[in-house]
Each structure stands twice: as C-alpha cells, then as structure tokens.
Amino acid sequence: MRRWSGMLLALFSWVLMSGVGLAQSAPETQVERAAESKGRPRGATTEFARLVERLSEPAGYFGSDNLVSNELSYQHVLDRMEKLKLEGGVYLGVGPDQNYTYIAQIRPKLAIMVDIRRDAMLQHLLFKALFMMSKSRVEYLSNLFARPLPKDHRKWNDRPIRDLVDYFDRTPLDQALAEKTRLEARRMIMELGLGLSPRDMETIDEIYGAFSTDCLEVRYTIRDRPSGRFFPAYRDILLEKDLHGEYRNYLAREETFAVIKQLHDQHRIVPITGDLAGQQAVQSVGRYLREIGETVSAFYVSNVEFYLWRQDSMTRWVANLRALPINERSVIIRSYFNYAYYTSVHPQTIDNHFSVQILQTIDSLIKDYDQGGYGSYYELSTRRSLSLR
Image 1 (cartoon, one colour):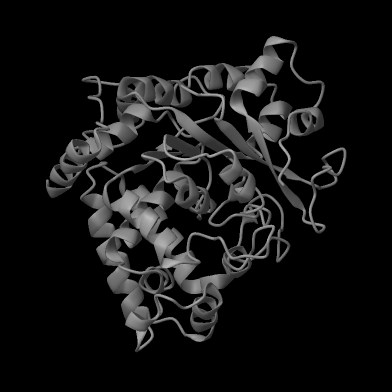
Image 2 (cartoon, rainbow, N blue to C red):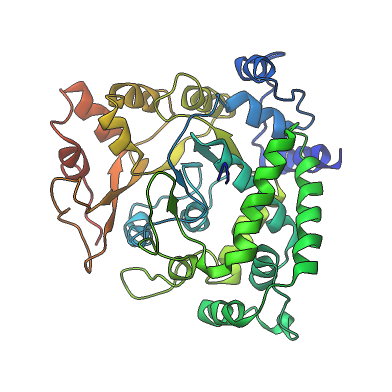
C-alpha cells in the first residue's frame, strides 16, 4: 500500500474513571530522535499520541497489504478462549480488524496493536476515526464503504450481519459521501496530535480509497507476486462463523460493535509500530504495562512466528515475551497456514480451511525455550497447542 485539546480532556476523564493511567513519557525518547533523524514530524500533543511514540520503534518492511485478514479460521478459538476465562487485562495484536473480534470477547482495559508496517498503524488510526464518527454498525460500514445509509437505518440495530453485507453489496459508491468522510476522518486523525507527515496522510487516503472503491471485495494482497482472488474477500471474513455455526465477528451484533467503539472513543486501542523480535517496541510495552499494573490476557501474532523462525529471530521474540507481565492463562493466538511451504497439515485443521487458529499459553512457550526450544516451526505450532473444543 505504499502504493498502498479536547482529546486530552477525554483521555484524562477515562483515566479518572478506570484507574488505568497513561504513564508520562521521557522528555525525548529513542523513537522521537529516530523520527527527527528521518525527517518525520515530532511533537506529539496528546497523551494518546505520546503513548504511541513512546512504545513505537522504526518501521520495517513486510511484502503484503494487510487491509483485511486472510484467516477464515479466526473465530475457531473463541469457545476455547471463553473456557479459559480470558477477559480483561491488556490485549496485544498484529494486523487489521480481525483483532476487534477477539477484543470484543475479551473486553480488555487496553488494547495495543503492534505491527512492523507503519501502514498498519495508519490503518488503525483510520478505523479509530470512523468508529468515533459512527453510532452503529450500519453507520460505521456506511462511512467505511462510502455508501449511503438505508432510509430506515435506525431500525437496523437487530438486523443480522448478512443483511448488512447484502445491503452494501448492492449499494453503489457515493463519491460526495466518500469525500466528506475522507475529510472528516483526516480532521479527526490530525486532532490526535501525532504529527503525521504528508505521506502518512496520503497513505491513509489510499487505505480509505481501497475500502470505498472495492467495498466488500477488499482482499489481502501480496506485493511481490500476483495473489489474484486466492485470498478471501472482506465479505467472507464478515460472514465467517465459529465452530458452532454462529456469526461471531465484532460486526455481527450491536453489542460487540459498541465494545470496540467505546474503546476507540476512550483512546484505549493504541496502534504502534514495532517488530515482535525488535529491540524496543515489545520491551517498551512490557515496561509500560508494569507501570500501570496490568497483565497481558492475549497476544494475537497471526503467523509472524513463521517469518521469525526463517529469520532465526525466535530467541529474540521469546526474550521479548519474557518482558511482558503475564499469568498462567495468558495466551498466544497464532495462525498456521496449510500451504506447500509448511511441511505438514496441522492436526487441528477444520473443514479443509487453509488457516488454523492455535492457542498456546505464553508461559509454556517460555518454559519450552528454557528447556531447549523446538526442532521446527511445525513442532512449535503443535506441541503445546490447546484443544479448540
């Protein structure tokens, strides 16, 4: 996709109500110095922005545009997460809005999105603005896709997700609405005080243009080779079901949409830039969570560990996990893809899905590395995997 302070008052109010404060950042962090050296604007002006800068590290490269997930299995872990009583605490995750389905179930006090791609941080800022602009699911999708609302939209709160998908599938783009929404989202993002560069704002425009142009046909794409229609469309992601055949996406019900909206309105979904095996971001998150007395409930890592394994970076990743405050129920949510470059089909593959969602407790991963680690990525993905049922 490289083709692709009222705010402060609101945050302070949340701090008083929740008891979870944002610790003050150092006068000049390494991230600020790195930003200055690369010519990026400095000077975050809100607590939200200062936390983003404090926890972030310089961006890296990943060869795909992750506007939407490519994991149709993402809901398969939800039942097991309920049985583990994963709730509250702090949620960490990579990638776009599949995280919101996990967040809506866990209902954490704070969620931190960490991704090596700066574009991912910018995309979450766009999502944040659109959530803050929207009062309901149908209004959010209207803003995201730049399609006009149904005439009776106030009666849509109880409509099933398929009705919303069908409506936006047949409703044409409204260019005037797209421009109005783009400008309003820009204004709200700028008011967050992050000091974004002109190129950052162009990227946000490009992300919004992808959703407004392609609507429910938006897909995960790979930059360096044709991916065509191989990956699922956003439509498929929204209409995917859990292991009991129920719609559990965060947009399936007003109640779960409201969980994400409230977190965004209160600035408790914080997107940062960072490498899971890097030297700063995850370590900084760990220090910050200890300062505010919170514990990680879940860390969704998609299949990032596959790339860390190939890059011989797993030892640094585990060292970063050690820096996080966890308990015996804290889990990693990982994805395994049954593609040719993975040696074997995962034993928990369901209904011929290409992807498999896996749960493992973080402390078991750390203990295994203390005892010698794993012989292969397949072993990492299978030895301690919790049963999904």
